[in-house]
Image (spheres, rainbow, N blue to C red):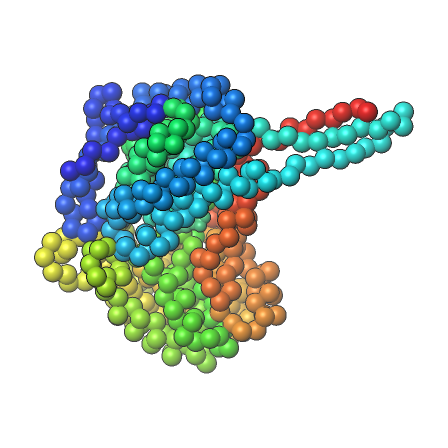
Length: 486
Ligand code: NAD
Ligand code: 6OD
């Protein structure tokens, strides 16, 4: 069993009362780690350390040195690539190729990209007339906001945590991270990287523990925190927003989704099947940008359902390192129970089950893991729970449509507005749809293709604010205007 400790003021540390909790492998339910469980004392210590660091070497450091240091963080992550991959595979049970080719490299890229974006970002300036004819010059400067609380989820833990930590540090802030209790390992490992490249103590802190009435909530309520960035469920976002109201702290939220995939009859059929398979089932459906509602134009509906069914039935269950395995378990038995209750509700609502719907039979110790089958339903009304609510599992409901107007209305009839994927060869239609769909990101003939310079976030109840590119700088800095009378 591995011990996973907090990382406070540049040191790995247990809780003062040595309180801890157990992490079990999603693959087979065996205990794999003991994790320090933080409370108010650890949160106080981490926030104090972060505040102190703002006034020390880090606060005085010039931009070039900070940018170089963040590049060194990226290089050190790359040097310790195998450690990060192993830690994330152990926490989530997801296949090696997902973690090693997508998630961990993005962690390193987050540091490189945001260091460069900060360095190259222009600031605004305006010349103005004055009554005496001499004029004045206004220009804006960016200052770090201070101590940033980063509250992150479990589904792509390293990617999602560094997506917040990297721009926050690039802008000169210090951070206290409360990683998900379900996937804590890479956060502490990143502390080792920070030390190895000489990031001063207190700049990057991690307090492990739970959310409500625990480390997460104590952190978001802490008066020493200047802004909160959160990725997770919409309900948790509401609770954090209430906490942020005390002290009028700024928030950036990336929340839940119930994303529509839209397939027109003129699409590249094979590419669309593969695209929808990835968007609905990659990471065992535990991707906020994933597709749980699939709308297919009627002439190709039956053929498309059959092709996606075949693709689902070809998945290879297994350990992340098993040769050929391409499909992992859910994160926990608690999440498995939630997903299976949605599977049951679909059948109770009268769904036609196309494939899956239950727990696969797996050999040996894997039979004790948090596995569920990839699942497709048809035939439900839009009011059914599995068509309306975020499940965050490997499943989708498929429905035929006849017109662009009809599918647009169906796609938009949901409280969430995170992402969509549209498959068509008609460029005008792609532009029309992308402009009318109420989401933060539309992918056309693709999915989860990310350029980190672009605005990223959710519409409606899928989030508040945008990060990515200069939008991250806008959240992690305070702009101050200087007006010089000439
Ligand atoms: P969650 O909201 O349960 O937990 C996320 C984090 O918040 C965890 O660290 C948790 O301990 C903490 N937390 C919980 N209650 C808290 C409270 N009251 N105060 C402070 N912290 C608290 O989410 P999850 O189950 O870890 O992740 C899955 C959810 O995240 C899904 O809804 C998914 O759509 C969403 N998500 C969104 C995006 C996005 O970019 N929009 C990305 C990934 C995941
Ligand atoms: O790519 C990103 O920057 C991002 N935030 C992805 C979110 C994935 C959700 O599961």
